Amino acid sequence: MSAICEHCKKGPMSGNNVSHSHRKTRRRWLPNIQKITLTMNSGEKKTMHLCTRCIRTFNKKGTL
Image (cartoon, rainbow, N blue to C red; front, side):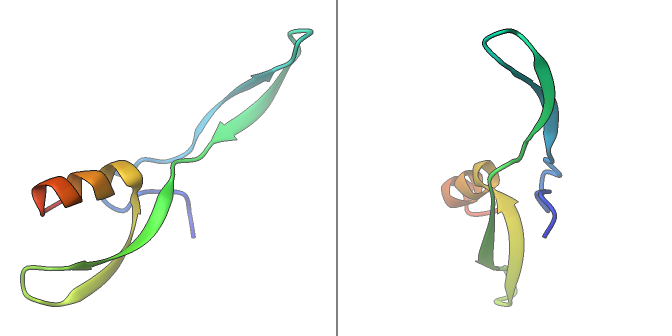
């Protein structure tokens, strides 16, 4: 499973770890992707990989 939201296309970000001595090494921040089963308007169930922000929006509005 890739770390990309199927709805908003949010993906990994990159940056630096900075130590106490201010040395920098590369790192990645991954979005919080969850596997969720949604019921579409036609009644069919669909499994998607969504970020938690999209899941919260879906729970609030009822649609994506």
